[in-house]
Length: 400
Figure (cartoon, rainbow, N blue to C red):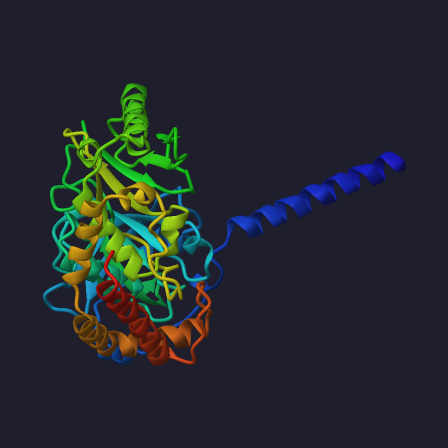
């Protein structure tokens, strides 16, 4: 009898564990709730409508496994796309844990999407943590204005997943090596991400600063190539943090121009992700100079009452010791204009406002991670507008 009771307990625990594991694995939550929007109402929002239909209505449950699906676009004659085979999976770190999920998309061959240059890999960004929906967009806008080497392109769309409306998304380019994106020699040069998630195959922490380096173009990677990069970064940091080094010494390793551009965008956006760091992209080309290649991921950006609060992050603690670098930062800040920001934000608000209302009906109220609380979309937009114009005006009135 005692043995039988123990057996029942063991079976019960195993069943409970199995159920718990299934619940944890299926984190799709509200994404697959039956939710329809009148087709005329959806069309009247005047954004492209993206349809993703997974094979056998399979749920997208993780960031590792690609699911077979079809992809199509309607409601924009010049951008419409017939049903095309894709694979799709989840993406993101903190964003993947939110109810409204972001996704990665892969075509079998390069495709032009919404008028953008052809590519295989694309992303659907949910902007769930941004009630203005504009933070990533405006960061890219600034990067393009000051001439960063590569600025991610994208368009706002309404997404239908497996027949159900799931909200307002941003459909854009994935940061990949490509002549139209990060234009490097994929076999012999490096696309690098600094990110504390530390979840890529080829990775290491730098010797002096302990920064998390990860290689993103890993198809041609080897232990030998990783060791070369690691040794080069060690050498670079030893020069950066040697008090006898001159600016000319540092410029053999660091591209001041791109690092100044990168700083200006992140500072105006008050992007505290830089402090971790997270989602910071760099390239190391055959000239062995580290460049800040693009900006990405501003969900956690927002108002910060302090100014110049990022000048101790990554390698800026040493770069800001040099007047030449300060002048570069001042130059790029001077190229931006608060009035342009206001006009761009107001224009974008008008474009996405009908879809924001549809998205709110679908997902309800949600708080922003940076702590600001406003009553509606317009108030969040005005708040965001005030934040970035204030920070730009401060930078221009108080140059380094």
